[in-house]
Each structure stands twice: as C-alpha cells, then as structure tokens.
Length: 249
Image 1 (cartoon, rainbow, N blue to C red):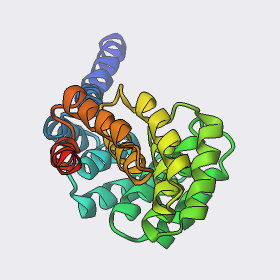
Image 2: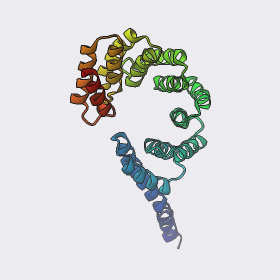
Image 3: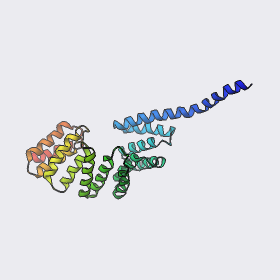
Image 4: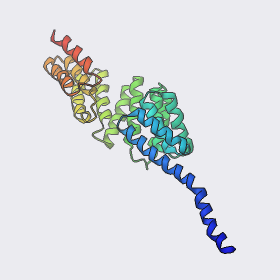
C-alpha cells in the first residue's frame, strides 16, 4: 500500500500548486501587456491590463507602480498616489516608485513634499537613472517660481544624460522666465532637436517667443512654421498658428 501513496502525494502537491502558479503566470502576462501599452501611450489599455494583473497578484510592487503611472498619465492623481504608495509599502527599497511618487506630488501641487521625497531618491547610488529625480526636482522648483534652483537641477540632470528632452527644454524655459532671451533662444533651439523624437513641441514655441523678444521676427516666424509643419497634432500647434498671425500683421 505504501507505493501508491508515495506516487499519489506528489500529484496532490502539484495539483494544489497549479492554480496559484497559473494565476502568477496570468498576472505576469497582463503586467507585460499593460506595461507595453503604457510605454506606447495607450493608457486605457494599460489600466485595464494592469488592473487584471493586480486582481491576480495584488502583492506585486511592479504592478502597483505601473498601475499608478497609468493613472498618472490619465490625470487621476489620487488613484496614482494610492497605487504608487502601495508599491513602496510592498517594497521599501523601490527607488523608481519613490521617484514616481515625487512626480505625482508635483502634479498635485505639493512641491515641497515632492522635493523631500525626490532628494531621498538622489541618495540611492545604485539607482540606474540619476537624471530622473533631478529633472523632477527641477520641475518642482520651476513650478514654484524658483528658477535658479530649477536651473541647477536641470544642469545636473543633463550632466548624467545630455539628450534629456525635459531637462534641456526647461533649462531654456528658466532662461526665458528670467528674461535672458539670448540664452533662452539658444538653449530652446538646442532642446528642440533633442525633443523631436518624442514629438514635444514646447521648446520650439518658447524659442519662437524668445526670438520675438529679441526683435528677430524672421527666426520667430521660422520656428512657429516649423511647429505647424512638423507637429500637426502637437500641444502648441494652435498657439503657433495664432502667434504667427499676430506677428505677421
């Protein structure tokens, strides 16, 4: 009688483990699908897939973090913060989630709290993306109107990643906001080349405004026409059209 019992026990253990293993496999599949959709900018699909992954594996810090990012992209800031904080609770050393929490706090207008969180991120010397918290700290200072500290952080971020679109662009914006239009026009022109791949038209628009402030109408018109031609679905295309009409009057 002992041999059949020995043969049956492993089968029972495998059978018991199979549903859990199946759920984990399904969770990984939906997490991968959701993360891919998030990277492609398809946020509704990302939320749907990552929500399914969460239902199957609610203790996955990666799922919680990515779901929080998806909600951030949809401007559902309260939900974004809930999920990203849960990711950090599940994995206290999850530096990327802490950086994302800083992003959410900036969007919620909690700039000082965001800077406090992001300074913690900069202390993690193992973090592979040191430019990220620096850009976010710069954005917090920029939104606070502290352009000097914003500038210092954007320059530090560029030191780690020269072609960082946001750092290059908002460094130029710092110069523009402080009325240093010569430095602004040069910096924003440079940022425009770094931001082209991401279809980010903001630096070209502010480059056009900078050239206009310098009395260089031809260059201003050229940058506005470039936005209209290269970024027909861009954020600033309508502003570019209306500003171009005003300049040409």
